[in-house]
Image (cartoon, rainbow, N blue to C red):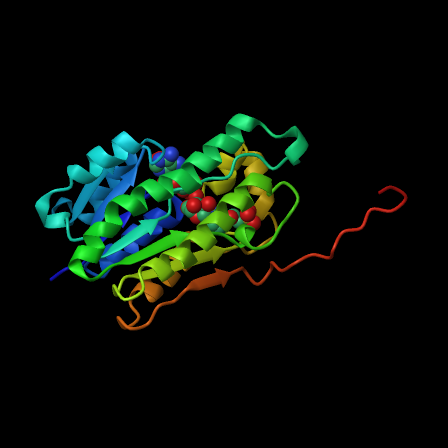
Length: 252
Ligand code: NDP
Ligand code: 8X3
């Protein structure tokens, strides 16, 4: 019988690439996001019989609840929850940051992920099978200037993923945190408030990870034998690594 994956943030980037890859491997899909037109387009492309779409904002508990309740019977046995919806806003120093942007990142990357996980987990535990795959980031482990709240939300995702594993001990449910570095998607366009030119500069002269690279890692993680849990995967493009400790001179 075909397995089912629920993907948050399937309208773009990693989520969309994962939808295409899992679909090509015979999976049934529940695709979510706020942009209905993109979800409909994807549903048409991948085949309506195997794709259920749900348009909602992960930050809204009521919308999450309603969307899960409306999942048709034939899609209700969810094998994978891919908590992918997320965003960074801004790259300025903390002392100049926009508090609304910080709140949006917390509400999406942390609270949205919590709403989804809390709602789906009991269904997995009842069935004795399931896999929660979260999208963390290298920013959850490594600081960089301007990473402030974004990185901190991903540090939450990292530790929440590990803590989930301890709570789920003995249930057979798997948990994985995928932690990518530089990857080209709509991520930087969103980060810079729609400024595509500024976003393009982030990737100029680099060979970043692609959404397909990440989708393949997600698929590999999910297709390990049932007794194997990949706790986390940290992945960067070859062109990226860490910087020096920075030291300011003639000041503090
Ligand atoms: P994209 O901007 O291309 O995709 C983000 C997805 O999240 C979209 O489908 C968007 O859908 C969805 N989303 C955002 N906010 C909400 C919301 N409030 N409710 C529902 N869906 C939402 O970025 P990526 O594919 O690159 O990012 C996917 C994940 O990977 C994110 O969690 C990101 O933090 C993480 N990541 C990205 C990296 C990168 O360099 N690209 C590296 C490491 C991690 P819609 O707007 O239609 O709602
Ligand atoms: C996205 C990667 O380095 O821009 O999580 O934070 S980074």
